[in-house]
Image 1 (tube, rainbow, N blue to C red):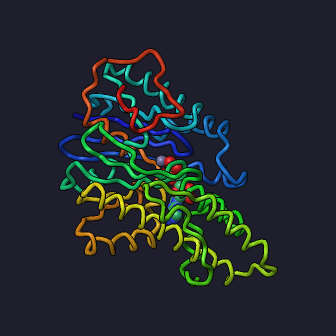
Image 2: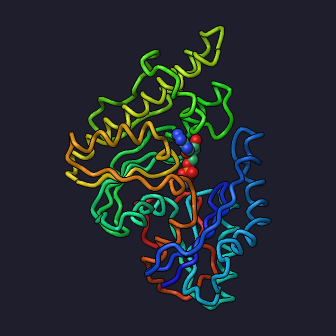
Image 3: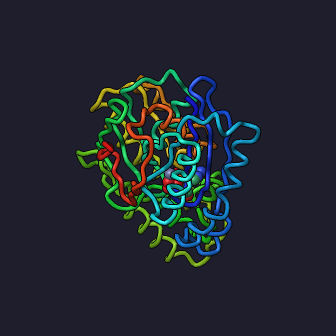
Length: 334
Ligand code: KG4
Ligand code: ZN
């Protein structure tokens, strides 16, 4: 089965081809980050226009010499995400499926993230636990079986990536701030500031990030000279607080569910400090921790093509829109 995957839910235009026997045989991704940086965040209208102008070339690059007639089905992200951006991907996918006369499969973007490490590590078997940490979502998901996902804990306010981006803004770092925080934190001392770990002791698996961000704000407001050293110390202390919070909640989730495999996915999973801290859990909890390759932590189409390759579409095509700006993982039945 050869599946062409399309991802346009936010600020990446991406297309990939996944062959059930050979694995990933082509991919291309165009990031809009440079365009949005000047506005300090993603501008939805600009994102949609850019998807429109780049998607054909991204597909040509992904295909390379690969004959398009060999594609058996089209999988595309139909939510959650920016409505206008999703519609561009969907229209393109509909046109392609109609031209090639192949089935069309709408895919949940979050399912793509949480399945992505299975592309690289076929030994991962369900059930497993997934900590999904991105710019829009922070949740602990009990992956019981294909299509059967239970969110057992989540952020009550800001997503983890969002908190990284907001703290980066306070430190005058560019958007998206996660990678910049990670970079300057390397030379900082994580013990300098004792930022709160909100909800760390609550008896459920939920967490909160906005209090932590506000605490960084108050700290920054009290500092007269926000020089590079001070910024590094704030970044390192903030990153440590986030990591401690995630580790405490995930540990509790592992003990509650008794799962033996843990997947960390989503954009923030690219953070090497957080990756290392989680790796240390393996021995203590007798579990195995997996991360996607760095290039598959952020948004990409390989994960969408991969999830699509595991599905058998019931219909040949859709002529109605399946796009959903909000599409919780536990409402996955299509
Ligand atoms: O999954 P993603 O590419 O997009 C969605 O939100 O779906 O995640 C983007 C988020 C941004 O908030 C970005 O700042 C964060 O992931 N991020 C990081 C790192 N790389 C990306 N956060 C912390 N450390 C990183 N190295
Ligand atoms: Zn994402």
